Amino acid sequence: MKALGISGSPRPDGNCMLVTAHALKAIAEEGIETELISLSGLRIGGCTACMTCLNEESCSIDDDLMPIYRKMREADGLIISTPVYFGSATALVKGLLERTGYIVRNNGLSFKGKVGGPLVVGRRGGLTFTLAQMNYWFQTMEFYMSGVPHWNIAVGRRKGDVVNDAEGMEAAWNYGKNLAELVKAVHSK
Image 1 (cartoon, rainbow, N blue to C red):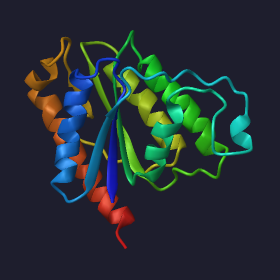
Image 2 (cartoon, helix red, strand yellow; image 1 turned 45 degrees about the vertical axis):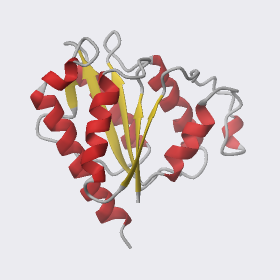
Image 3 (cartoon, one colour; image 1 turned 180 degrees about the horizontal axis):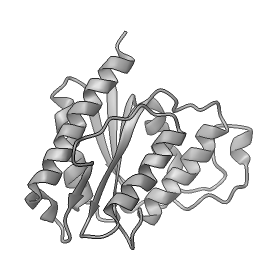
Image 4 (cartoon, helix red, strand yellow; image 1 turned 90 degrees about the horizontal axis):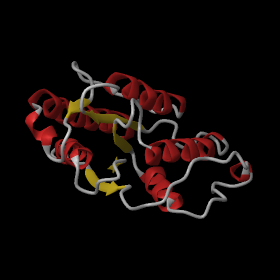
């Protein structure tokens, strides 16, 4: 069993990486292999609705999406984190969700039955909207999802600030534990 964490922040070592790594550490403690990747520095544009993915499990846009998609396809568990940019997920994350969503929906719901969900980091506003935005994608891809009592969000403005949000870090940790439990329940044979 494997869980993949994707940090959707343009910062390679910012708050999203910290909170996602924290959740993955909780998952790893449960004996599940983990991998953390960052979208920082990658080019992942938005969907153009060209419908190439109707005929094959690929995308016509020549950028960095497909290697990430293949890792997502192989994982049993998936966490995608994003900072809040102007009340929403980052453009990198929205491009990732749009294009993988089209590929998955047009190719037999290839993510159906996986376990996953989002982690959201923000300074103040937009946290719950962005969490809902991300949850909608996981739901329409037919993931099994777990939750935590105070939502899977953390507060931080400057790089590293998120570690000072004890409740947010605890939520990420507990989210990792809950996700691991669900991965084992769904994918154990």
